[in-house]
Amino acid sequence: MKFKQSIRLLSVILAADLFLLAFLIQIIFIPAPSAAVSAPEAPRTEKYVALTFDDGPDPIHTPVLLDGLKARGIPATFFLMGSSIPGNEAIVARMKAEGHLIGNHSYNHVPLTKAKTSAVCQALDRTSTLIQSITGSAPEYMRPPYGDWNEELECQAGMTTVLWSVDSLDWKLKDRERIVKRVLKDVEDGDIILMHDIFGTSVSAALELADILQKEGYTFVTADELLID
Image 1 (tube, rainbow, N blue to C red):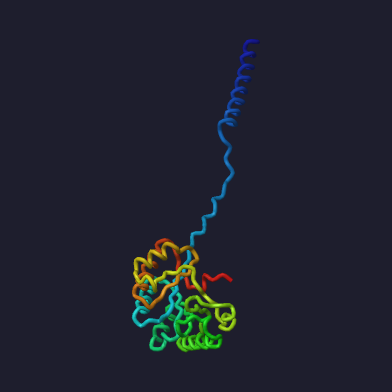
Image 2: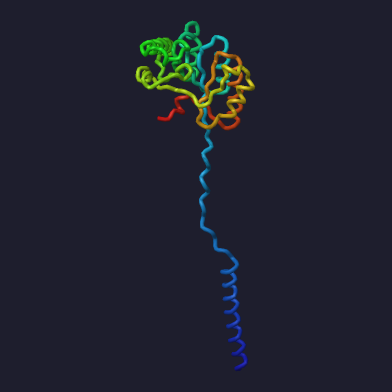
């Protein structure tokens, strides 16, 4: 009888030992479930750039450029030379209708700081009046020829001055491949690219740049969207 009781007691002790061993193994070798970790926020991937064109409208090259921009769904910014507008009113109207931003580039391509303030204002006003007569609204943005400007003139002009951050030098290079290479070397998110729509090489380079930059993830916007207050 005592022997049977001893066997039962040993069985109970052994079962308890096995339970304790299993518990210890679970603590030591089975890792506790980790706390939920939220995925890191995806980095900002949007890249924006603006194509801007000076000295137009040109009766030959500007329509080709507009066709290419329309086919690609790209808006651009055109700073118009007042003396180039007469006879090309339909091109200006098309710019407006297709969603491009139209700015003032004075009436003639002369350094404005070397002229009298009154003459500068007269040239700008004359150009704005021509644009307004076609589009129904006066331009709010202007680009001085050669980027030649000062604060005194800005107060008189009443328009926001828009310069550039990437100069294609298309007027000098006049070679599509070299223009494209120069811009691609420098362009970054937020850049405003300076070009001219009065040269065939500039137009073909601009459309090639549009294709390349779109493939690289850039979104094209008008220059006003990239200005920082």
